[in-house]
Structure formats: C-alpha cells, structure tokens
Image (cartoon, rainbow over the protein chains, first blue to last red):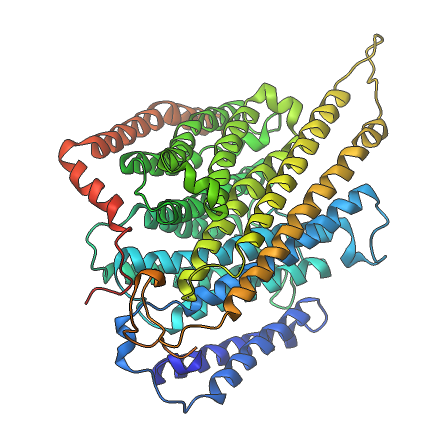
Length: 550
Length: 56
C-alpha cells in the first residue's frame, strides 16, 4: 500500500496521522473524566498507527509513471473486505438483538450488552459499516470506468476509506459505552460528526476531481446517483447534527433544535438517509453492475434520468410522514404523505427499468446467482417502495406506526434491496478487481442466495403478521369502551413471530458468513503469472503491463 | 407567529407547487427531447465496452 504512494503523498499521510494523533491526544487529556477519553485514546492510536505504517516503508521506491495507464483499485479491494467484515459483525449483533426480544435475559448483565445499546450497534454496523464501505468501494470503481480516468491521486481514497471506518468504529464503541445523542441513525456525538464531515468532503472532492479529468464526455447516470448520495448525505449530516457540546472534554452535546422542530429536522434527516444513503447510492450500484453483469445496456436511459430527478425532488419532502398524529402541523404531515405517494413513480420507474433490462435474458438470471441477487433486489425495491408509500398514508400509519410492521418494512428494504444489490455487485466485482475468472465457488454463491432469500422472506412475513396483530390489538375496544388487550397481552402474542424473525435473521447471517468466506477464498486464489489489467480477464490474451505492487 | 405560519403555508401551496411542476416539466422535456436520444443511447452502451484502461 505505502509503495503506491508518491513521496509527497507519504509526507501528506504522515502529516494527517500527526494531526489525528494530536487531536486524539488532546481529546484524551481534556476529557480524562469522561468516556470521551477512551475515544481520544482510540483516535490517538489510529494516528500513530498511520505514522508507523507509512514510516516503515517510507524509503520504498516511488511508484513509476506506468501507474497512470491503469485504474487505481486497491482502495476498492480494501473497501470490499471491510464491507464483508462489517456485514458479518452487524448481522451477528442484529440477530443477537432479535434473540434478546425472544428472551430478554440474553445479555452479559452489564449495560453495554443491553438491547438499547446493541440495537444502534447493529444498525450502524450494517447501514454505515457494510452499506457505506460497499458504496465507497463500488463508487470509486464505477467512477473511474465511466469517466475513463484514473483517480486523481493515491492518498485521498485511502483517507476517505480508512477515515470513514474510524468513524464507524467510534460510533459502535461509543454506543456500547453509552455515548449517544439519541437521534436515530445519527447517534454519534459531535466529535465523530465533525470527523465525518472532513472525510465526506474529501470523498466528494475525489468525485469532482475525477469527473473534471474525465475522458468520456457524458457523465453516466450511475455517477449522478452516487454524487447525489454523497452531496445530500453531507447536507443532512451537517444540519441534523448542529449541536453544542457541554465542553470540549465531554462527549455529551445538546442539539440546536427543540421540540417539534427537532423532531422534524431529525426525520427530514432520517427519511433522506433512507433516500440518499440506502436508495440513491445503491441505485448507482444497480445502474452500473446490473447492465454489466447482464451484458446488456439499461432498458431505458431516459427513464433512469426521470427517476433520478424524481427521487431528488420528491424525497426531500417525505420525512414528515414519520410524524403523523404528532404536534407537527397537520399540513406538514399531509405534505409528507402526498410526496411519499408521488415517490412511487420514480421508484417503480427504477425497479421496472432494472427488470425490463433483464427481460430477454432470463436464462442468465436462472443460471447466474449473482445476477439473481440483483434481480431479487430490484423486486424488493419495487415492493418496499410500494409498501412505504402505502404506510405513509395517515390512516394506514395509524395502524402501522410503532408496530413491528415498520420493522418488517425497513428490513424488506435493507435485506431485500440494499443487501441483495450489494452482494450481487460485490460478487460481480470481486473477480474483476482481483483478476480471476470467477468466484472461488459458484455453489457457495448459490447457497448464499437461497439463504438470503429465505431469511428475508421469513423475517418480513413474521414482522408483517406481528405488526398487524400488534396494531389491531392496540386499537381493539370492548363494548364498554375500554381497551380489550393490555400491552403485555400483545407482547405475548408477538412471541412466536419474534422466534421466527430471529431464525430468518440467522439464515441471513449464515449466508453473509458464507459470502465472506467465498470472497476471501477468491482473493486467495493463485493468480495467473502474467497478470493483465483488463476488465474481463477471460477475453484478454497475454499480459500487457503488470499490476502495481499490492 | 401566525403571520409566519400563514405565509409559509401560502408559499408552499403556491410557489412550492409551481416550481416543482416546472422542474418536472423541464426534466421530462430534457429526457424526451428527440435530439438527445442518440446521446442517451450511446451513454447506455458506453459502459459495456470491453476495455479496462483509462483513456490517454
């Protein structure tokens, strides 16, 4: 890794390590009476580790100018590995949390292992750890191919990837220590938030700098989705996390907003995190990897443009559907509901576009589990966006809100759409970047596919049943006008579904472990002696130029 | 405060409606403008080219 950096970049990396270490040291010293000190130590260690890693090979020869003749994929490779590590960890913690709902005693007795703390560990690990690393890894790959230009330098992609993972580690360790600002999907405290802003701006600059150097005049639609993801997530993250820390030495901070304004800002953030992190970014993935894997262009490029602008215009206004029947003004609730319904148009345009691309290539879908991952993802994307629009209707929401139906909906999207499209893209990408003919085992991809589908279906059906029963029990009145069921009655009715959900999650976790093993074995496959820099190795004859040292 | 609330409601019901309609129309016109078709078709095809090197 260090050998690929130029001398100036190595100096830059050492400087970054130094600044990070100093910040961590100061945080540790000033906050020595607060849990923030542990994070200070962690940040300090990350900075020192960087300096040592660079220093060890500081005098290694600089990379030759031949590197400009090939794309820079090593950050992508590292991102794939990190994504798979995070997914195994995140799914395992998620399934643990699910079993805690079956049996609340499944903790280690201390605070860190309680449901309230491991639940955000699960969501952060799967959304930001797995999803985020998958997005960074694939976006850097797609950006270079579609621009026909190499990344602008070697240092900034590593800064983004490793800096982002430092943020994820700060997040999950913080939750276990009880550091949280209690905003869903934005639980991290101020110092981690500031760090993410720095990382994210550099990420966006990589995109702009590469596009500025592009040789292909047209900016392919996948890049628009990826850029919307980066830009809007930056905006959401900054606005929702505006807060004043108690002091520089305390992890705790207080948000600038209060009351219903705070709730509205939070769900403007929360729903757009779904829109631009969990949807736009992964649509970028879909619009590149699905046509590539199927070997045919996207069914309608025009439709992809209309979907893109539809999603960017409409999603911004949909967040208030999370606050039906609250102190939020009625017209704002109606606004959110209306835009949620309109969202069905661009969402189904994308889902239909994906499926129509496969129309005429169903034999490939039948034979190729990787392509089937992407196909199922598109189906679940269509299903979940329909369900989401439906649930945003105020009257439907009165039944579904606060019940397991919401949990089922989220997991139909997260497991069925986000994870499936990511696994499909990663299975397509791994042989391309590691220059092998195919994955280590096609059978294991097949096994992963069926475990993932079975796990998702069991999970979602369990939560649909559970949620609707829960919602109905909560609103059933007796003849005398009192509630028929106590809360505990509904809790007991949930029990079998919670067992089923945990089993569904377990199947999905086993699938994820198989995937991680298969990818690792593919990386370890012996490489042909004359490595080529070509995209599809089976079609290339003879070595052209050697890969840069890894 | 009631003035601000009324103003906001009025603003979103008038300007908000029209600028979103205008943006939607602009996107539809752009996507379906006949002379853009060739560009979009070649963009859809462009990723499938069998090569894996930056262009010089």
